[in-house]
Image (cartoon, rainbow, N blue to C red):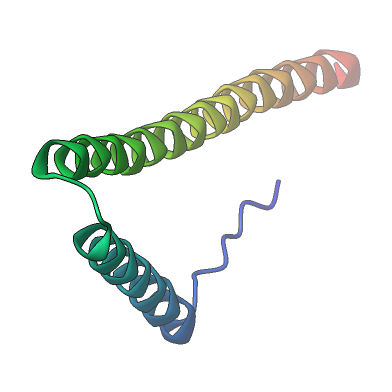
Length: 93
């Protein structure tokens, strides 16, 4: 079983942070410049923050589910390997 994992490069990580920061800045600037009263801007700001929060939550949930499936597969593979080794030993006797 090959469980190699390739880490992201420093350039990709930097690009991700810069992209998020610039998007947040442009969104905040657009919200500030929008011709709405304070209540409207506040409502949109709360919606934007909630959207970002739920995006992070669903990403973490999907990754956790994938990781748990990987762990379950590892356990099942180990059990199968143990049974095969046991079967081969009894077959040789």
